[in-house]
Amino acid sequence: MHNRALKKTVRELLLREEMDTVLEQLYAMNLRRVINPLFSFFCSGDELLRWRAVTAAGAVISKMTQRRVEDARIMMRRLMWTLNDESGGIGWGSPEAMAETMARSAVLTKEYAAIFASYLNPAGNYLEHAILQRGVLWGASRLARSRGAAAVRTAPFLGAFMESHDPVHRGLATRCARALAPFTAVPIPQHILADETIIRLYTGKKFLDIPICRLATDNL
Image 1 (tube, rainbow, N blue to C red):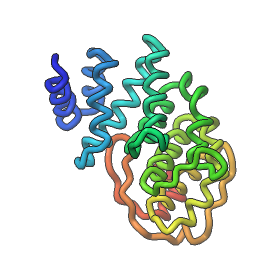
Image 2 (cartoon, rainbow, N blue to C red):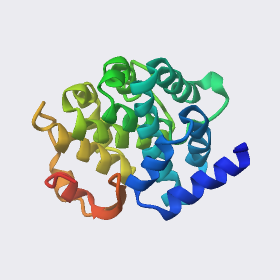
Image 3 (cartoon, rainbow, N blue to C red):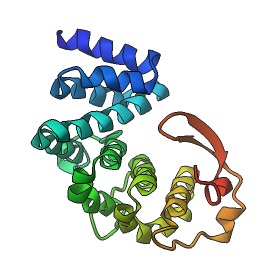
């Protein structure tokens, strides 16, 4: 299948099929080829396509570890490169895809969780772009819900984002703090408990429009 035809096929899968079916069909393809269309959709203006591509990319990279782990490492390094100033790009979707991959792969979590947490650390590889910060915070909450012990590294940096003027920062940092509760205590400020600002949250399966205060109490 030529690249253009492959991209069209992957796009149609992501938009028309249930995710379990999407992944089953993607796993039957050449994983190293199918990852390129998935990465390209991270910049899509179609919200559903963009987020499903993130989920699928994480699943495909994780699947690579079962066949040839070095292929998966190459993909993780590609995602990291897009977050580097020298790449010349922005890195849309890369933090989310890294986290989705780690949430599915214990092997890659061990290797990349510390690097991922450093994107929130002002003394580390801090990402200053507000939208990329949203991506890292979404990824931190995704990782916290699946591999909380590894996500604990993000805990010291969540408080600052709960004070952000950006409601998505506040909501995602709160969601991460809530998910980390069994592993470490992250204080949730009183103003968060009263914050009824509604944000749009992708849970991995669906979108929720939800007030920030609920993210402090509900395991969503």
